[in-house]
Length: 191
Picture (cartoon, rainbow, N blue to C red):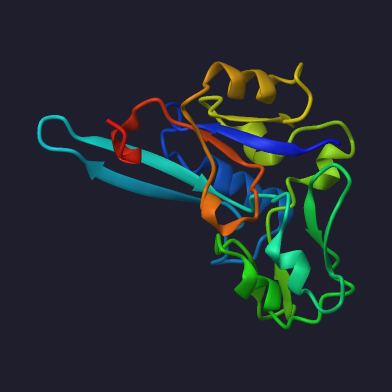
């Protein structure tokens, strides 16, 4: 089974926010809302050994999405390629999915009275293109592909970084597909 995902190499991310801006532009995300946020982490450590990281966070396109389970209308659903989407025609704006998401990445659009989130630019992916955030990443920190295809760039990157690959909030049981690579381990409490 296919599992499309973004793999982000945090050692390469400079926190430039290009992914956030590209997402807003491509998807018409409303003013003040973001489907992709870049968090600044740190600094950590002791002077002069300080470290800082940037952590881009968007929908994790989970294998077991909590948002899909709680949606009363079936507006939140998962495609066969692993992309989790919202059918705006079915969305009643109850925000149950927003409350269920442990990553805080669903946004309520008060003007439209609907919930929105990262779609992995499914409209572009369906045409054989890359998500806007991946295309725009100037440092190539973000890669996109099928995690379950051993020949894909993302699967190879994850294998090469074995022992340095992380998911967010693994204890939640949602099995997020987004992967993060970080070789500078002090932030993760291993160094």
